[in-house]
Image (cartoon, rainbow, N blue to C red):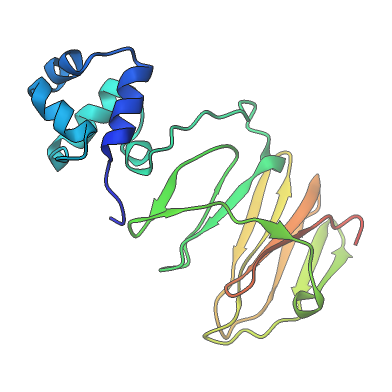
Amino acid sequence: MNQYVTGSVIKKLRESKKLTQLELAHKLCVSDKTVSKWETGKGYPDISLLEPIAQVFGVSVTELLSGNSISNTNVSANMLKTKFYVCPMCGNVIHSTGEAVISCHGITLEPEDSEDPDDNHEIEVSVIEDEYYVEINHDMTKTHYISFIAAVSSEGVQITKLYPEGGCYARFRMRGVNKICYYCNRDGLFCLNPRRH
C-alpha cells in the first residue's frame, strides 16, 4: 500500500462525527491515549482496526486510506458522466458514473482527463447499418498501444479491450452514443462526439 491512514484524517472524521477522543476510543476498544497518539502522529492504528475505524466513521477502508470521503453528486447515475480509471501496473480498465475511490495493485487511481484527438491519435468513425465502426490509426506495439475503445450513451458504456500487437478497431451499437473514448498507454484518454466527427 502506498499510503496509510493518517492522524489528521482520523481527527477530521472524528470531529465531523462530533465524537471526543474518549468516545471514539470506547467504540474501538482502545484507550483515549491511543487515539491521541494517532492524531498527533506518534503512532498508527493496527491494521486490524482499519475496518472498525471505517465503520465508526461510515466510510470505506479505501476512503479512510486515501483521506477522501466520497459524496456522489451524480445520484441519477448519468452514464454520460462516466469516468475511466486505468491501472498502470496491469492495464485494468474501470469506469464509474460518479465519484469513487478506486485502487488497483495498491495504487489509488485518479480518473483520466480526456482530450480531443490529435494528429498522432486520429480516429475514423464509419456507420455500418446500426453500428459505429471505429478504427484508430495507431501503432499497436508492446510498448505503445491503444488499451481500449469505449462508446458512452445515456443507457450504458460499451467497452472493447485491445491488446498490443492486435487490431485497433471496434464496433458499437449506435443507439444513443454521445461519446467515443479511447486510451493510449502513453498519451492518455481521448474522447469525441461521433455525430460531430
